[in-house]
Length: 266
Image 1: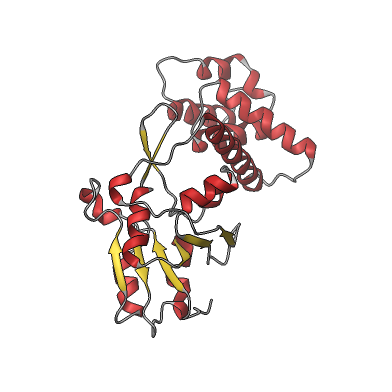
Image 2: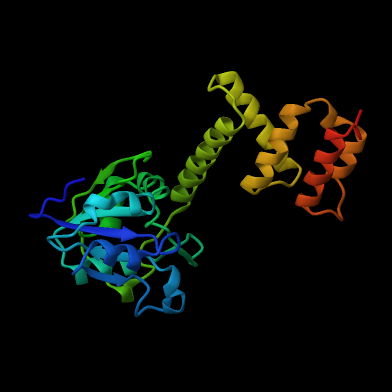
């Protein structure tokens, strides 16, 4: 990516996944930079805070994207650094339908597009405030850019939690995340993308959830066992393991793996 020096381009780096200050100052001698959590109620978690950077005119960050692109976003805006970071600080938390606040990982380039596409065009514009374009510079990106009007009011840190999620937003996000998980799981298991394979995978995931497995890791382990041993999992000894009220999910899966691998279930 070549930075157009006539536009305001910022980097938003995920401080929980990389050493953002080190990378920034390694490739830029005079950037404008600040932590999103600084000066907010989240300041005690500064070491994992997102990090906003406005590269200098002679920045080498653009020529060294491989150091940060997998865990960073590029933001295009006409706002000043102070206006932009104030707005981003207002998005650290969003309000759930229950009224409770929840962290919003809008700075994750693997999740942002799912969130923004769950919103209407008008909602996306309000959420983005002065941002006219969100860009994903990762070479393996599932999305490249999302444009907005960039004319909505820029909020401030004091407004944190102003953006309200609805039940409809939550439903769209849950469906989108479930579809993304099934796609990832299907690739992991080496399944093709035919309707029959997708339907089979969906049934196995449903069975896993019926047995109390809900984390992606546990669902993936159960599904893999079910594909390898479709009949044996229905035998009494395996059913007894799945229904054991004293065992944790991890213990159940370890025991099933041992039973199926070493002949405990005929």
